Length: 484
Image (cartoon, rainbow, N blue to C red; front, side, top):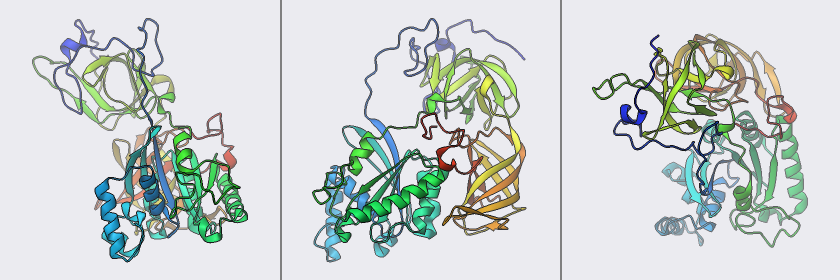
């Protein structure tokens, strides 16, 4: 392979990458990327004023437990609703003969949702307080739409699971807790709703929270915070309630604002799935070859030895371009262009990883599967497997068990997985894939199965064992939490 050494500053000879475009390059940065570990000889890092942190959360619960009302109450009481939105809700509520605004209408936007009074699709809402910004996914509660919770909670750092105080923990509550555990959501908040309908009884709250916490711990959930609320009237949602003098914990919003974010992808082994190869081949940049993508975890540095997967070839990072300028290092979740010292055959779907911590590619994959469609998944099923930016053919070799949510037992050899089933499967891929265990990385440890005939997403999969039972799995973080 040809080995080239730059003879001129990179800013003068390479195109920059900004949102996938090429163009003039600003003056190169002379300071490290904020948050990256300093290297010998690096200049001091400039002081950066941190803005409000970001928390991704998802709500879940059984039908009519009050998820949409809780979200609407959060938006309303935190003053995150525009005047025209509130007026539209007031008009719709008045047309239904209601004396007060139905805050659930702030999230239930589909006509079918409003007619039936249920949530069908995942509704994403964005709001902020002076302390933190939030991206909230309001997921459906009906068993028919359980698959949508997998979508909504797949990137969540906290899950709010609602329970009707009158009904307690039901099967759908267990299902949502199991999905939160499967997806390794670091924090789970139990909102015991409709406390006004049980007279704000402390014993009812204690009984429900104890039952849920015991079940969640059996799944390996490291942390559960229980809050007694009335989403309809606002008790303990944003402001403390005078109806629960026996409760001394945080309100829902205060907990969301103060819960530590366990998500710190920059702390872990670096992974860069290649999305696009940049070759301008212009007179100004005749030899430029950059590999663009978003760093999913860890930090990449100029001069670092890396392995290209699945080929296994090695090279050294010659330069990193970030937003049109050269930087000595970049970290997750930044989008960058990496240039290698060697001319290797690298294309979309490949993975760039540090040489000493690269995953071992494999064609035989054991995974936990959440089946999403009405078509059953059976042994012998031929599928497309999409992992990161790479899609390969695969075949389902075996379905070894299906999870029974009531007692967390495994039903051996079920023969198939149907809609909303969770089970253990074995696949054989046509090409080796650089998979990490899902417990190590939610990005490079997950993949989906696709119907090769019509492109339908069939199944969401997580590589490795399903649960960290009792929080004692060896691959959990040292502090007992799940951290990616």
